[in-house]
Image (cartoon, rainbow, N blue to C red; front, side, top):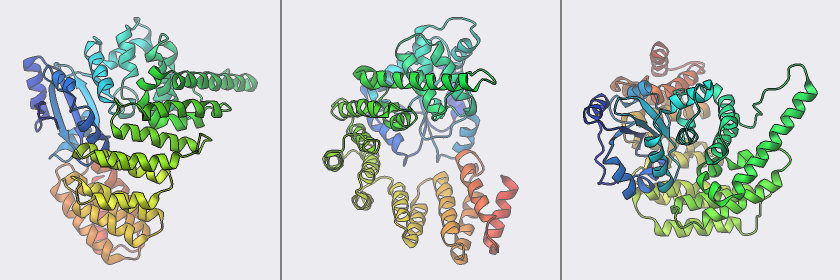
Length: 465
């Protein structure tokens, strides 16, 4: 991370106490060394002079997912996805969660808006839904720039997000915040139309649904076609734009063309990092499958990957770039080149064990079971950090049970080691650890005749999950 930022770590409770004593908000970064979006943050946001300048007025705290007790703290503060970025007031109240995939300039602007909003996201949401007072423009911006995908039920249960975000978007005054809230609502709804329909009136219900679909398509077209608005929502468009079009009904061709033009603008935007520009080229490739322009796009992916890899050497920037490049090459049909890139990157990466998981996935896609299991095992054994090792050990054993359930010696050896890792961890049954161990427990229960070690591990998990 940038040396200009004095990141706190260790005792989060003490950090909140310090923030209160000095009257400074606390900025919490929850992440892991191997996580590509975390590496992108370090390269593109945390390295920005403007970000470092703002951190001097805040108390920046890094909670690494592999730190002792970190998974238990994550459960307490409702942190799960890497990365999660939370801004707390000096009094310890959560102000907001910030989206991690904004570029540096837009992220700093979002942070400034959160600091200036005058209310927490929870207060603004409650006022908007209850109609107790009108929201200021800064509060609508706060809600539109809230990281709904890392909310973890802090503001809303996941099941309520589609309907509530749709209500917010309809109540929001026209403008940038309204456009972004509508995008959030459509992503949360995952293609479902969230609207009140007259009970018992099928024709009226169908007409209302058709009108809602048409209105959603109109809004998408306005965002895609407006260079400034599209740029402000680049994070949503590159991650969810293809799905938004798939859910849009009969106007797909028009929307594909508009988003393709936006993607081309993103790819040519020198203010974006090379990884973000490559993501835009990948979006063009994905749009080809929906009927977008196809001439030369696959070769454009290849040449963009080669040019970017030749230029980017900084470890964090390169880590996220390689991850993006592999996805882009696979989308373009260059699976062998993607796999060769992963193999070549192992020697120089600061987190090669992450790329080993990608190599396992590549082997699995081509049906090579021995190579799949070999890469999963190698990733587990090379993993750095207690939580990462525990989670990836569970991933390895789940894969062995799935692919070679008859290989009892391999299952027994892995089960014994994972049991030792569980015993050594203070938060083995918390948060991300818990999720992977629950999955493993389900697989162990499927073994017809588990060996002694697998049986012991199954009983251990059953007793604690």
